[in-house]
Structure formats: structure tokens, C-alpha cells
Image 1 (cartoon, helix red, strand yellow):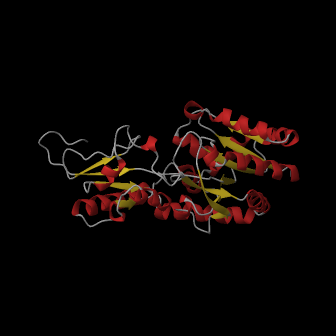
Image 2 (cartoon, rainbow, N blue to C red):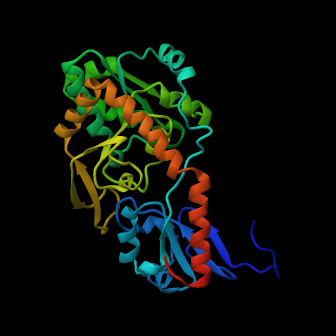
Image 3 (tube, helix red, strand yellow):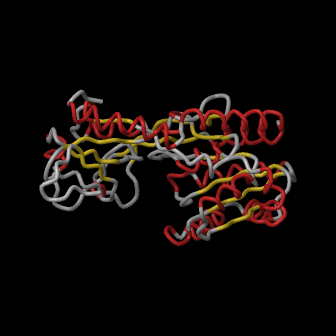
Length: 324
């Protein structure tokens, strides 16, 4: 709850967008923020607010869920001692292995063979174009693979984005991929998402820029092995036992519609992504071992209980002026 008039408050925690970095009426402010492109964008701060003045205020600090984001806040002027890294977490009573529902969901969706999955906005920074291209190459080689995409149509019109990239593929590749692609765009509850994750065999996240990658963590909690870009925020919560990493190259470029802002991103290697997906499809034993390792890893380190302990520690350290 927000402190009432006359009630003492030590720390105000904010999670909003654009990020409200203003000094609170009393105490200090700890702001949850990400910087997926490695820079604090103009859109991240309310109009008329000076980021330099914000960063200079000792009463304001940032908590961000991955080390990938830290350089952006240092570049914006925040000292390292006022940047706290606390990961996100999952409710492992909901996001958990669900073998009891797996076959029913696969039958309902018509899923067969090895099913690769991706969840989210389907935007370019998520690497949806790379995933479609890689899967098209794999599908041309073998008939026992499918791709399950869960978009967010009510927020990002994700289906339109997928169709755009499908239309950019060579005609034969696009037609083949469309016959192996299952797309869902409706809003689902966490419980429904847990069941959907378990219908797949591997989660694939060939992202270029991410602030954290929550669906990756959810999928791992449900027992899916993961293929993800090497070098990004998922490095913080994917170990080698439960994942395979796509070789990537760090690039500096300017995104569309953000004039005058130089940003960074990772460019995953397409052919290596195809190689990794092929290897996962061929190795059921690894999928089983990696899925079990993923569940154990998430339950040991990324439950909300463990994450909240870290956040509370950040509150205390900020209040006492000890630094991150």
C-alpha cells in the first residue's frame, strides 16, 4: 500500500511504464526497469523528465531483472551502487510438469513428433523471423517436427507479424511451414499456459534483445529444455544442463522509429539455430534429462519466495545506503 499522510515510509517500490523515476515524497524509490536494447530510451521516461537529473538523485535507485540491462543504467548516469539485479520468478505450483494433460492437449491441437514452441509478441527483437526461417529449413529435411506459436493478439497483433514474416519466406518454404505451424493468439490464464507449455518438447528463444525473457523461465519450470541466444539475459537463469545456446554476435544499430538512439542487440547465427534444433529433435534422451534439470534448477533458484527474499534484501541495502 502507498504510505498515507503522516505515515513513515522508508522505500517506495514502483513498477510502471514509462518509468516513474521521481523522488518520492518521503524515503527512497526503487524502480523496476529494463533496457532490452541496452539503452534507456526516450519512451522509457515521461516527457519532460531529465534522465541526467534522475540518475544524480541519491534517493532513486533501479532494480532490474538481468545483468544484460545494467550497462544501460550506468550509461544513463546511475552509479553501480544504485543498480540492483534481482531476477523474476515463477509460481512453481502453477508452472510445473503436467504429464497428466500433455497427451490431451497434443491431441486437441493436432501435435505430433517433436514440437518446438515460442511465446510472446512475435516481434523482430524476439527473433520470430529467425525462428520461422530456421524451422522452415528443418521442416524441409524431416516430417516429424512441428512449431507451436503462442502470440498476444490483443496487445501486439502478433498474428499479423507472423504472417508478415511467413510471406517473406520463399513460396515453397512458406507453404511447408504453414502446414506444420500451429498458432494460438487468444489470452490464456497461467494455468492454461502451463498446460500448453507441456504439450511441446522444446522452447526456442532466438531473441536479439530482451529485458529478461519470462516465457523462457516459465517453459523451463514446466519441464521444457530450452534453445536460447547466447550472451543475453537468459544467461542469468539457464544453465548448461537444461539448455543449448545459439552462437550470437553483439551488434550496435538503431531500431526503427527511435531516431538518434544507438542501441545494442545480439544477432543469433541462423545455421547454428537450425543445427541445434536438429540435434534436439534427434535426441529424446537429452530432452528428457534437460527437462528434468530445468525443473530442478527453477525450483531451486527462481520461485517467487526466493526472488522476494532477494528483493527485500535490496530494499534493506538501499535504505541503509550499503549499495548494490
